[in-house]
Amino acid sequence: MNADPRQGSLARTVFTTTVTVLAVVAGLYLVYLLRKPIGWLLIATFIAVALSGPVAWLSRRMKRGFAITLTLLGVLLVPVAAVAIVVPPIVREGTKLVEKVPDYAKEFTRWVNDNERLQRINDQYDITRKVQDWANDLPSRAGDAAKLLGDVGVGIVNSIFAAVTIFIMVAFILGSGPRWTRALLALQPAERARRMGNTLERMGQAVGAYVAGALFQAFVAGVTTFIVLTILGIPFAAPLAVLTALFDLIPMVGATLGAVIVGIVTVFSDFPLDTIIWVVWAIVYQQVENNLIQPRIQNRAVGIHPFGVIFAVLCGGTLLGIPGALLAVPVAASLQIAARDWWTWRTEQRAAELTVTGVESSQTG
Image 1: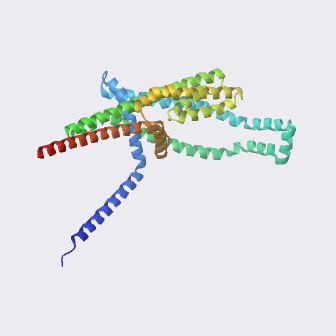
Image 2 (image 1 turned 90 degrees about the horizontal axis):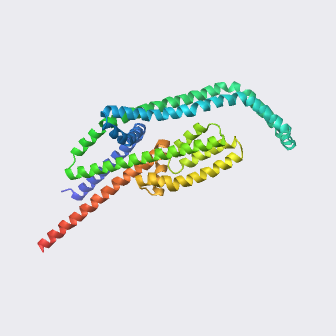
Image 3 (image 1 turned 60 degrees about the vertical axis):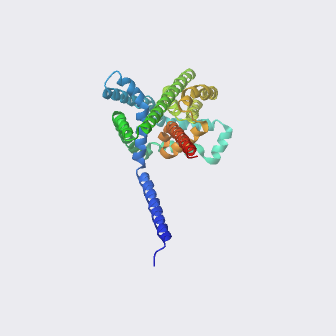
């Protein structure tokens, strides 16, 4: 008795589908396990693409190896300078704050005792005694602080290891990336290689233009913040300006976050005058940045709708945190360029197929 061929075909279909699903699940699980190095690779690739413009410009004046070294040294100086400006004042003032906490507690107690209404509240809840006990116990909490600093130190070491790894990967990609790209394109048919080369070139130009625009925008935000804070006499003007510039690199929400942080600091300076002046300035500057600076510098580089920018930032931040939010817009711009080029190629291919079909039909008729 012969077997039904349909049963054999069904069995093969079920087997193929099962194997495919298992392979996809296994692949996704492998990507999940390797998410950290894959994320580092994506970040390194983005940085290398962003630096390819300066490297190419310097390569016309010196050997490519020297150009890469000089560019990477310039990039390395940026975080070093930022840390040198931000960290020392914070550590210095933090130490002073810890030393003066008992004095602040005594001042708070005198202030409460001089106010009849606050004194009644204090008699009911014993606030001043709790504040004094907390201030006196603060030196004994050095062990907890040491443990916290140890945990922070481990995090810093891990971050430094990740940064060094990414830095090395960037150097390799800058040095060998063009050769790898040419080898990949050499495996493709001539027409496809030409299209892929044009797409990759446009993606690189978009990323480079976006990064240059974002850095210039952050620089303007930092400089203007420093000028305003210096005029107002706000302490930590330079560190706050650096933090504002760094936050400004985050699309859509970064400038607002930076303004809020600076606004909190102004509360402790000359409240409410300095705070009101800063809030008015921040609102005016963000309007100028959003309607004048950002459209001219960034939107022309990437050409993404604001809703797409927000969605890309949310996705990038969910996947990779702050680095993902920073990379989201240029990555989305690259995907948009690739999708448009693919759609153009597909449309032209379909038009060519219809033309050939029409010619064949006319010849047959």
